[in-house]
Length: 100
Image (cartoon, rainbow, N blue to C red; front, side, top):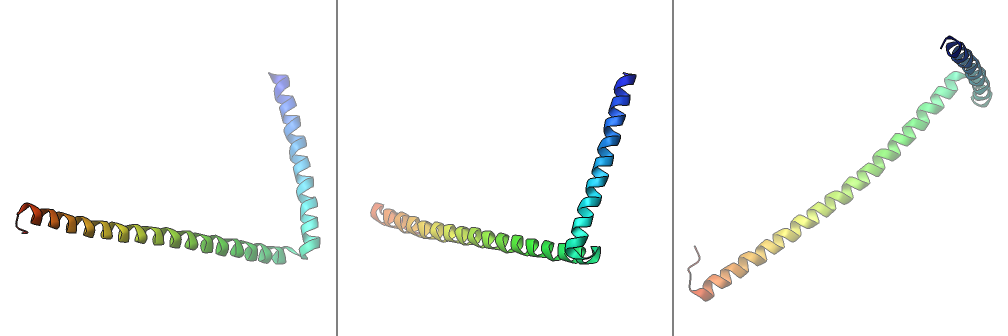
């Protein structure tokens, strides 16, 4: 168990060192591409804004489609209820029952 903890600790330390060097390499590459961190943050904010705007536009479109479908179904139900009311009225007339 003690040996295992030494092995795990060594593995974790090497992993952290590798991640640290990878992060610095990535940071260097990003800084080279964007100039500095401020420009990178601005680009990230712009990218995020575009993604959020697209997401909201897509959601608005989907909600509009759903809304149109619901309104269509409500209109259809209204038409069917009108037909049912008319049929019941006709049946009542045929049977001699007064419409109240």
